[in-house]
Image (cartoon, rainbow, N blue to C red; front, side):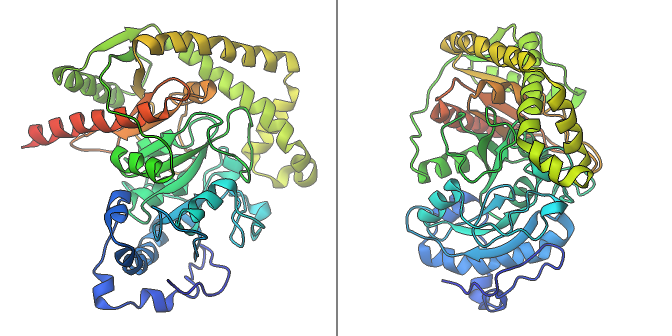
Length: 440
């Protein structure tokens, strides 16, 4: 299908090793430009093969300014299926045999993975082409990588799955894998104007993924639109379910967010109501805030104990933010941790009851647009409650006329992943149709 070449390509030199022949394709091949997952899925296998060099050339041109990739080195698929010939990117905390797995950390710079994580094996087994490794915050925590937001290079793409979101938003890859312990998939998707999906906790194997907090860590995916995400989920062999109509829940009073997000969220609700959607309020703001706080506490407690040995080995050579988390987390008592875990457990039946009357709940996907600068990846408090509860959640772009992207977050009860996806497709269709009519 293509030449693999030498084994190492890093972002700093950005040598697409062994790919000169691939990029030097014929003019006909260069004219092929598949971008979204649906476009790749609908293309023939031959067309996919011809489009791969163009995909790599696009990365070569774009990434020197975006810095989404740690390494670009296409790996042969190990099987065939609906993903045959479709490239994807993988976050750098996920093990990949023969490719960089440095956890976004300088102390592990140059580390090469010895095996593929379970999710990578699955995707390659279905014919997907592992294109390379995307950059991320150190140890999937706070300290940002050099990745920039393709919508505005002066702003963060979010994190910790920074490179996966940016690569997708820049059209470098039709889908990418991230992880979420607090808001590391849903928030970057909102900031970059794409779709991010966090499946139900425990649904997908975390084998080969560096933990941060095992009771929270979840795989996630990035795609351009909800339609692309639904198609990806189907291509991975998961049920997609029928289109449903039901009442939608929203927090009342509203959660505190930036004025731009508050306005966009209210406008989205107005559009949905005009389209015939029933929206019912729930008194959730307080419990969502408490769940976010609990998420942070659990992450600190579990993360500190997972990284304690690493801290003893490397000390202050580790990322300063991680060191601070370890130090604070080790000071937490087992009693504090158990209380937070018990609170989360007590909330799950309450939300299951809410989901019986409003099977889907809508909230802003982030407090606002992507913050200026690269010093922070932004605030995850809008996503953390659903990570604590383990519910499936998806971020979809809210159509706006100007400015940086904003996202709408959709969640349902644990195990209702197909419901979240099909609802996202339906609501996104309503919002985009209204936006087109308004602009026309």
